[in-house]
Image 1 (cartoon, helix red, strand yellow):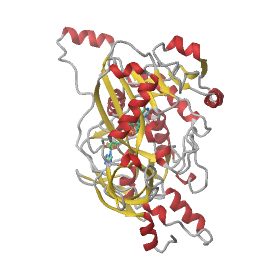
Image 2 (cartoon, protein in one colour):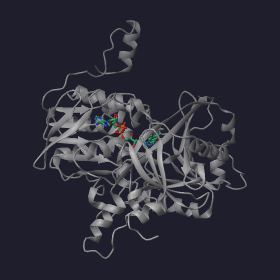
Image 3 (cartoon, chains in turn cyan, blue):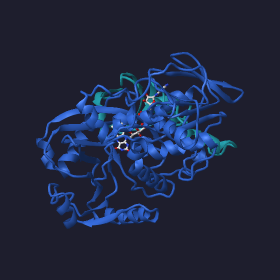
Length: 95
Length: 416
Ligand SMILES: Cc1cc2nc3c(=O)[nH]c(=O)nc-3n(C[C@H](O)[C@H](O)[C@H](O)COP(=O)(O)OP(=O)(O)OC[C@H]3O[C@@H](n4cnc5c(N)ncnc54)[C@H](O)[C@@H]3O)c2cc1C
């Protein structure tokens, strides 16, 4: 697989490590009343779709940035790559 | 039809014209007592034990493709019970005992071969971990022996003992472990279940679950609706897809694991050997092919094929421990989609939907579990209670903070 890094251009997927579903960006509020349930959901439960999946890859063998890669889990076709930082900022998370 | 040596002899004299198909190809009935979704090893074993041990009647197995086309026919055929944790070891040891009696039970040659598994260690720390594991195995009635380098050398002279980076210091041996002909397991269970009246419905994909007021009523299939008050799901890598039809999200990611077979060679290794300093395991089939594998590819996948980086990684592991492998040509390679759970351990449990039961999360190790999984799932379907060897495999263990994490890797499926 080739991941088209937004800053560095096309890179071999071997340079990256995989974390999982990009919902991991949305870490719940640990002080909220429903925190235990929210963390169970966050930590354990996944949509695990056969099709389009937004997922976190870490450019360990490169510039150490986190990316959100949109990929089809049936074909490995990658349709979009964003810097996770930009995605997080858009979602109102701190930088 | 009972299979026997006499029968083989008689058929040889009659030009092999008396053999009959090993199972029927019936049309679906409008209603059954119990439906089992998934005609892999676990679904077929469940049907067999439900019919033979729990007196189950009117049972159907629904398989979207052909039986044996999933992971049961794609794995590297290793069976063993060398687990560490209390939640796992009694279950896998029970499974190994069922393997030992399987062929008599099914009247089918599944080529159960207790040729032993040897887990190599390459450091003092790894040896200590294996001593601990071996003791845990013995406490649960399994067999385990610690070998030093000399004993390993006597057993497997062709390994790379003096590799400067990872010298072989010894190994943990389980002699009762081994390999089983994987397709024969699917066929043997199918034939045994069919002979007790179980309908095995191939090319029947479940496309919907009928749920009314929190109760299962039946399923939609590509061959029409089928009613049933009890439905068991055992679809391995497709678990999240099927359970999403009931609106459930699960502690599971689907990942691909690859396997490889070399050209046929003269006898080189007698049992199963695993490299301790990288992920590589190998055995030799009765036809002579080296059957080997290693890590999963590491990212969510529903493509039943893997990518090249893992091929390289597996072969590097092979070259490190068995340099002779470099001269063998690769004959075949393939991938299978597995349900990797958040703690690396399986789930055999009820679900919030009344009458709907789940058997899932087998990761890359569910082949060895096939008999015990079938027995435990049949027990659950018949009685509504967990089998005594499977009490830890609850779906709510994640919420309750009681994972069964053999590797201690945390809620990260690609690390288990
Ligand atoms: C390459 C590889 C090597 C492995 N090596 C080992 C090993 O050495 N030892 C070991 O213990 N384990 C091993 N495993 C793991 C083991 O193969 C699996 O854990 C186990 O086979 C899963 O259970 P099963 O046999 O029931 O799965 P499967 O055979 O995959 O059965 C599931 C079935 O469900 C069907 N299905 C899916 N969706 C639907 C639907 N909607 N409707 C109807 N049917 C459906 C599928 O078609 C499939 O036939 C390996 C796996 C792989 C991929």
